[in-house]
Amino acid sequence: MRIAVVGTYRSGSSALAGILHFLGVDMGGPFWGEHFESNELSAALRRWWSEPRLVAAMASEARITHLREWIMARERTSQRVGAKHPLLSLSCQDLLDAWGGDTQFIWCLRPIEQSVESLARMRWWEHPERIQRTLHDANEGFFQNHPCLRVHFEETLADPRQQVERVADALALEPTDDQVSAAVRWIDARRSAVRAVSGGPALATKRREPTRPARRESKIVATVLSGNSESIVGEAVASVVDWVDEVYLIDTGITDSTADRVAELARDKFSRRSFAWCNDFSSARNAALKISDEAHATWALTVDTDERFAFTDFEDREHLRRTLDSNEQIQAWMVAARDGSYSKERFIRIPSSLQWRGRTHEALIGAAEGRRRLLSGCHFWETPKSKADYQRKLERDLQVLLEETASQPLNPRWWYYLGQTYEGMKQYREATKALDRCVRLDGWPEESAWACYTAARCLSALHEYREAEEFCALGMTRKPTTPELPWLAGWCCFQRSAIGEAIAWSRVAALLGHSKDLAHAAIFRHVPAWYEAPYDVLRYAYRQMGADAEASQAERDFQREKALRQRDHRSAT
Image (cartoon, rainbow, N blue to C red; front, side, top):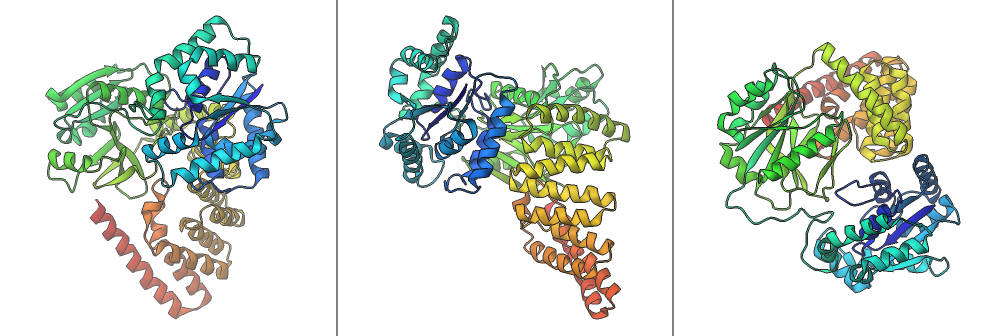
């Protein structure tokens, strides 16, 4: 059985997806709180339809292929599979072509004026009327010629049991009494949250944090996940203890003196909580967010035992507190690595609707556009791992990632990190295969481009420079504003004595890097490619050509850009 739940935003489709879940349909969640939908499919739909523009960004053939592969992967473990998302309203014909004529459609209906008003109150995007009418008109046009079960929002609120039984009968699900009762209880227990869709008091919604009475002063807590780390945890805690109000040690199985060391440094700020380690970093981090909420925190600072923080531009904790509180819209503040190569969400507003996802290489999901921001004047760095510790990390990640790619073969994220892990183990062939799979799934543009860059780096290690250049060119089709790609392509061309091509690629890299807009590549960066690296290739390429004047100019450009990078790095840290 294949079921698709469609409708405008704020039409009760999340409530219906929960009903289907309790009636025994695999809806793919919960991926956030108790929203039963596939995070992977939701991310794909947002890309396909350029949310919130709602214009096609991918050909229908590609969408149909993805939907077909997605349903087949889910049906390996479930006989009844459903998908729910408002953007499925634009893909009804795709669903029919991918899943077949037996696909069951459920259209969640709500008066268009009410749905527009509700979306406008959420302030997710501009032009809520255009968005809602686009989705409504798409459904209205499709269901003129195709049958569907129509479920009205207000009827679901008024009589949940009647609607649960109606849905079960229409789909011939034959649930048990316990399943029906569970679905009814689920709606009853969340009726106030569902009422928020109709303009009532807003509780926890997908894009709005839960509310709590205002506090006189915000509170910053640090959460430190730790097992046995007595040799390194002290410096981590010492780097943040003066900047927070409390330090929570999340004990994942400590048997050495780690806790004593943290208690000694944090003194009256110290608290200890236990979390049974389950080989899942996201579960541990979500537990830390819950502990922060219970502590009535306003901001939770995530600190790993191998991380060190520096607050270079803040006078004291009160200055930091004022900065964190300066923008009520911010859900998470990003902190940059000391070398400028990437940033991480490190200060998270509490209580939070955001959740960590992923057993390893976990990601914080759920933030609305523009509600993460880089915190200036603060940076962190990671202490180097010993060779043995690094090898253990790679082996642990490899086991997890092989399981994740097997269970979620259409999620490009896991293929990327599998490739990265293989690269760390110097298994470059396997790394390139995994990274190529990531690229072909055509996910997040920056991730796809960086997968190409990493694959090219692996092929370079194998001295397969032509093949590496091809990956760089492919990456430029995913995100053409990435200077790392033409820089590496130019370097590969130089290695195979294609001097003219090396110069052409390097000029492109230098042009792209000229903006120094590293903010648009917050997750993946090779900083020298934005500065001196292209000129490094140019100075040698021109010299080999016998173009002495050009080589001398490239040398000057190289020295200038290198000094500029060092200056920018010093000012940032």
